[in-house]
Every structure is written in C-alpha cells, then in structure tokens.
Amino acid sequence: MTDFLTTQLPGTGGIIRQQPEDFQVDEIPLYKPCGEGDHLYLRVEKCGLTTYDLLRELANALNCKERDLGYAGLKDAQAITRQTVSVPLRKPDDVKGLQIPGVTILSATLHLNKLRPGHLAGNRFRIRIHQPGPEALQRAKTILGVLAKVGVPNRFGEQRYGAQGNSHRVGRAILRDDYSAAIDEIMGNSAEITHPGWQQAIEAYHCGDLLTAIAKLPRHCRPERRLLEMLKDGKSARKAVLAMPRKLLRLYLSAYQSSLFNRLVDMRLDSLHQLWPGDLACKHINGACFLVTDPAAEQPRADTFEISPTAPLFGYKTKLAENQAGQLEQDLLDQEDLTLESFRLSAGLAMSGERRPLRVPVHAPESTLDGANLLVSFSLPKGSFATTVLAEVMKTHDLG
Image: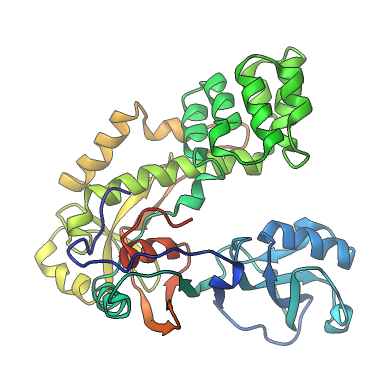
C-alpha cells in the first residue's frame, strides 16, 4: 500500500489482534435456509481454525467427504468468526451434542442446495484497537463518516499473500515459466518465519542441502516437503512445482492477480469515485459492467454509489477498459511482460479473470470507547477486506 484515501485526516494509531476476541467477523448470508431439503445448513462459530480446518473437522465428525461440504466464504483463524457451512444428507438431530474443539454450532436448518463460494452478501466486522492515540474516538468517527460517503479502496489485504507475504511472487514466477524462481519463493526467507525447524529448512535449501531441508521442515509443510523430495529424486523444477496441490497453485496465481489489481487501485487512488472515459463501470446491485462513454452523464450515479469504476483481475477472458483507463491497464501488463494470453495456463491452472470495483461501500460504521481501547464495527460486501478500512482509520501499514 502506498497511501491512504483519507490521508488528510489523522489516524487513531494503535494495534490489533492481541487475542482472537479482538477481531470478530459475522458472515452475512445471501439467503436464509428454507427449512427443507437434502442439505443441512450449520451456522457455526469458530476460533483458532481456518475455514478449511473447519471443513476437515466437520467431515471427520459427521463421516462425510470434505469435498461434499459447502461454504460461502473463507474466514481467518486468528479471530472469532461466524459463518455457514452446508452438509449433505444430514438432519439437525445428527449434530446435537457434536463437540469439536474451537467450534460451536449455533443453528442447524435444512435447505435445498449446497452452499457455494460467493453465496454471501458480505461480512460484519467488530474490531478492538488497543493503545489508540489521543482523540481516537473522534478521529475514527470522522474517517468512518468520510468512508461511508465515498467508499474505501477495494484493495486485497496482506493476508492474501501468505505467511511470508510473497505468494504473489510465486504466482508471477509460474506465469513466467520460471519454476526455479517459484521454488525459491515457495521456500522463502527464513527471516519471515518464527518456527526454528522451518527456518533451518529454508536456510538448508538455499545452501543446496535438500536432505537437511526435508528433515527440518515442520509436519504441516507437506506440499513443500513433497516438492523438495521430487527435486532430490532428480525431477525438474517445473514437474515438482506442478505436482503441488492445484488449490495451492491457484492461490499463488490468484495472489499475483490481486497484487496487480492493488497497483491499479493505487494508480487511481485520488479518483476512485471519478468515472473516466472508457472506464468499465460496475453496478453495485448486481456486479454487471458497462462501458462509460459519457462520464458526465454517468457521474451522478457514481456520486450516489450506484456504480463505480473497475479494474481487472487479469485473465485470458478479461475485457480491458478503453482510452486512458485502458492504457493504465495495458501499461501494467507491458511492465510485467505479460499479455492476457499469459494467463491461459495448462494443467487446470488457467485464470479467466474478471473486473472488480476500485472502491466498495462501508455500511453502518460505528465506533465507541471500551475502557482504554477503541471498538470499531462496519459491514463490507463479499470479497472486501476489513484491513483496508482499518488502515484508513489507524493510518498504519502494520496491522498484524
């Protein structure tokens, strides 16, 4: 991130995520379960688990296949989060008394279809900021008031880039067919890791000692261990990388898409609400995009947050904007030595791309004092990150 939308307004300062209770997320359902059907919708509260951890634990407890479970969105582990998961061919009585550490089942209701990614309206956040600076409450109210009117930059959060903050560089190397560089990034930098064994494994890898690296990797680093074992057995870097789980490889590529989008947001930070000739604007009510040929005629719709300009998550099917907006997008591709066809990868890794609004609305912002701490709450549409709002409020890039 290079700047703030509300850079003229002083922030609150402070720190977050001292304990899970400091960061609470409520998934806002797109629809309510109807009460009948072959899928059991579980509203659950979790702490200390990722959504994928939750699915695995539920599948084991209910004796079903993990891939048959449905979810609407991914939620962090280091938070208290409430979300819905669907389980096929189960009844409410089947989950009575179910005990999974870190998980509480809040409700169980039948519905007709499996829950799919994206089947949510958004998320409601309640976040505690510790050690805020002077006048924190008034500063938070002022900034949130501005964001409620003009929106917040729709950047992807730093968590998109993995534990070492470099997932996008792995994706970039894969797109460039530089698989040796991809492996270097996958192993990463020992300075970014606190686990001693993991640190030693990274250092051994960069010294060319694959045997020690394999032996030192923590148990949870299964994809990395398999990667190094294939290299040890004489397999090519390309073959070793492409043998990694498809879900993980697509996360790397998606992180790179996200990093390029964030750069476009930063390029237009002073005019996120302003329509340019040739923009592809989206309707917030349904996500439909259209070409802006007369910005002056369309700008009132942007001023009332009915529409917003977009930027691409680059892919082989992506439609670029025209005129000045399109030139920004094409110049970025040129800087990265890419074309849209670069994203048409084989082996199930092709990225079709889409358009994403440059800004999103912040709904029902609130801020109060909690002793010496500051509590802020707000809702965002699906796919948007609370850290973008917190960065504006706190005026700090360190949100860890």
